[in-house]
Length: 77
Image 1 (cartoon, rainbow, N blue to C red):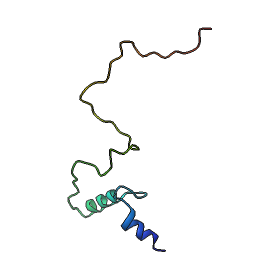
Image 2 (cartoon, helix red, strand yellow):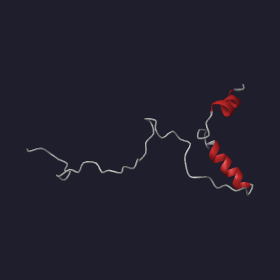
Image 3 (cartoon, rainbow, N blue to C red):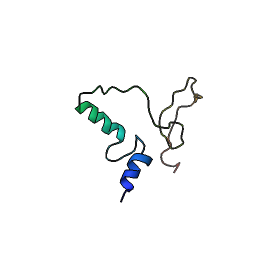
Image 4 (cartoon, rainbow, N blue to C red):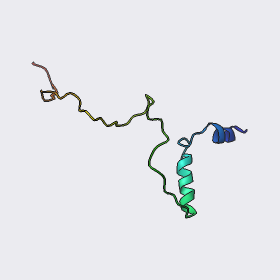
């Protein structure tokens, strides 16, 4: 009976929630009330966890292959 309230106030993160996260909901409310809705650059996501998929920049290039990459299609027959 009180599960939605417990989830909303104690276990739900700002980036969770369906169909809109708490961050998206608060942004819409701020814009609807003509309140400054600018947000700083950054994220609340944990970028270091193994499940996170993203691009990480590298200062040094990886090893460069001397051969061009080729895909073998078919067989010698």
